[in-house]
Image 1 (spheres, helix red, strand yellow):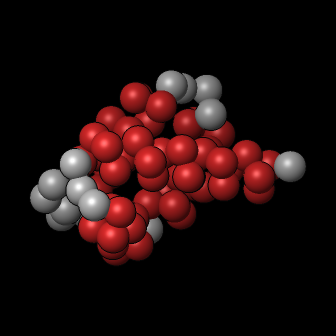
Image 2 (image 1 turned 135 degrees about the vertical axis):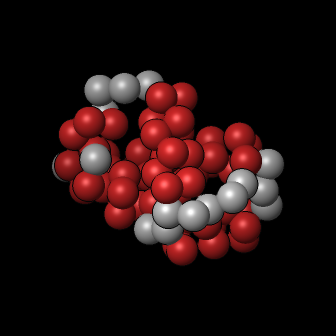
Image 3 (image 1 turned 120 degrees about the vertical axis):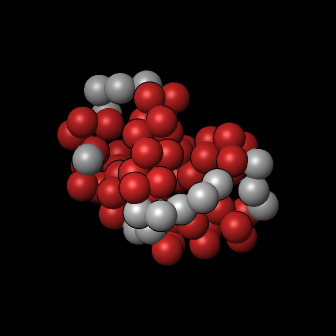
Amino acid sequence: MRRDEILHMQVRLFRQANKRWQKNIRECADIFDKYDVDGYIRDTYEFFHVQGDDANLDDIDEYIKRKGCIL
């Protein structure tokens, strides 16, 4: 069950990041792949599942910026 919940969160946050970053789907997928955002979501799921999506996206923004991503 937990794997399904994590996958659901990864998909939901991908869609919201796509809107927030105003990137096309391929560009957003490239960012998620390059910076292993899905792995980050999986690793921080216990923290993320108690927050709202906006707070989680803020955290992802900070994570990828620390890794050198410029949006």
